[in-house]
Amino acid sequence: MKTMTCIEDLRQTARRRVPRMFFDYAESGSYAEETLRANRADLEAMKLRQRILVDVAGRSTSTTMLGEPVSLPLALAPIGLCGMQHGNGEILACRAAHAAGIPFTLSTMSICSIEDVAASVDKPFWFQLYVMKDRGFVRSLIERAKAAKCSALVLTVDLQVLGQRHRDIKNGLSVPPETRVKNLIDIATKPAWALSVLRSKSRTFGNIAGHVRGMENVNSLAVWIASQFDETLSWKDVEWIANEWGGKLILKGILDVEDALIAAKTGAAALVVSNHGGRQLDGAPSSIAALPPIAEAVGSSIEVLFDGGIRSGQDIMRAIALGAHACLSGRAYIYGLGAGGQAGVARAIEIMRNELSVSMALTGVTGIDKIDRSVIAGA
Ligand code: GLV
Image 1: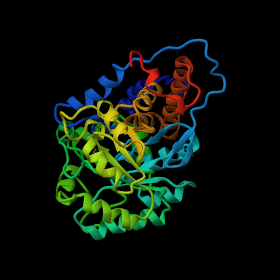
Image 2: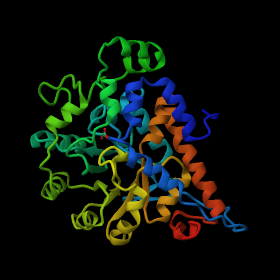
Image 3: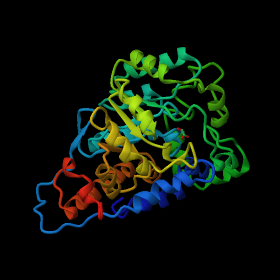
Image 4: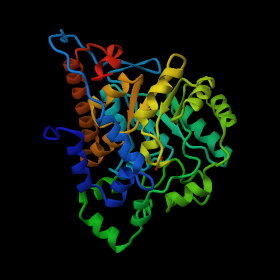
């Protein structure tokens, strides 16, 4: 893992090790992928301001998220099908996050269930909730998250309907993969992946199979989402969910100031400025372009988190400089997971930590709370 010097190295390795349909699933954005590309392009366009001869010996990347100490302003974002990047992927990623002192978020659409993960780690994790039409099932998911002692509920608010990802259709994405010749050849060339998945606790959607009738094998994710996810979801439901949950709530998927102002009044602990990694509304602004007005409008009343294109410590610094309290990243750790399981996720976090620490030193800041617009060149 030491020769993996950046997230791109992990990505290249994951691309060789993970079956194409699952690598593409994580990699893709919706439609023409304009927003996916804008997330990265707009971050890269922000230049950092080099400062010299500042004593930075005592600097620290530590801060808090939702009032809890974290060693780095970063949480692992919820990723559907994480356990299809590597067997037991959710457990391994959660262990790596906890060892690194940062939060892990388990997706509703995970392979390992809430209970599988809870039984395999010794600290609480965050649970991401999708709202289905069957509110009894939603309530049971919330109850299961409570029973697993999850420390925050991340409600995704930008996916009542699914933005189409062309490659998922072309690849025939399904869980587990269908026994088509193309898939068999692909899997045959990825023996380490196949072994890890064969040995894993689950090979289907662990939170759903066995809990929703007729959902033992959720073949087409897109079809399942279209039939089960609730298009009527509204702010009223957020209130209902907040009451059912009773704990710390994070609203993920806010891109507009007006929505942020409403979110800030719900009593949620945090919101995540996010366009779902460019996977939902194609043509929407990049997350980093959406961040400053939201941070300005509600940053003093709700914790503003950021996600969308984070691939380095420099990116974390850019988002914090524009008003984020901390970041979430999905693909960066998913590449690590595909490249090398738990060690790969640990490496992804370590890479971004080192980059952030060096970037802090070279911009002359010693603490996360000292990162502001002054670290951006020309700001
Ligand atoms: C689900 O959250 C997805 O983006 O596929």
